[in-house]
Image 1 (cartoon, helix red, strand yellow):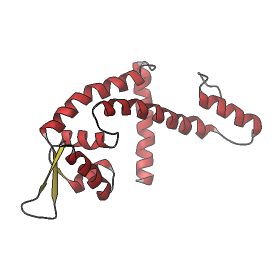
Image 2 (cartoon, helix red, strand yellow; image 1 turned 30 degrees about the horizontal axis):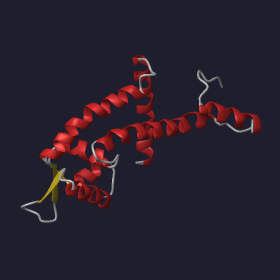
Image 3 (spheres, one colour; image 1 turned 135 degrees about the vertical axis):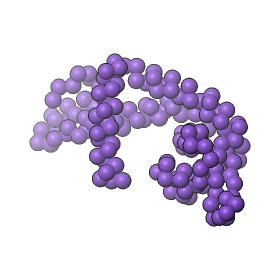
Image 4 (tube, helix red, strand yellow; image 1 turned 90 degrees about the vertical axis):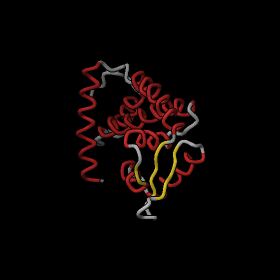
Length: 166
């Protein structure tokens, strides 16, 4: 296996090849790199979110509400792939900060609607350009065509994993 660049994972793989040449460490080349990339991306995104006074866990709730508008707790949980309890905790935190509002459904008291407040929408409007700028910077080491190919390959992998693991 030849790596184009000498990154930290290439060194780990070379060490394994030296001590255990019988093992196929190829999956490390993909999955460990994805994990390292994720850690860097999350750290950089967290700086943007912290500047807005929110956490990385809060951001998907806010942007989902911004895209969808008013939605139910159940739909929000489905959209985010979270349990109802996790969504309740996140919405509680955002409601305390005045970023989201809850309403009980007039026809069915079991249904809770969630929507952004004006302050929540203003925060999303402020954070989205900064968030995208950080993502643009994180991907600046790739040429546009490389980004397109990487996105396409990751889409194949994600679709397969979602189909098999949910």
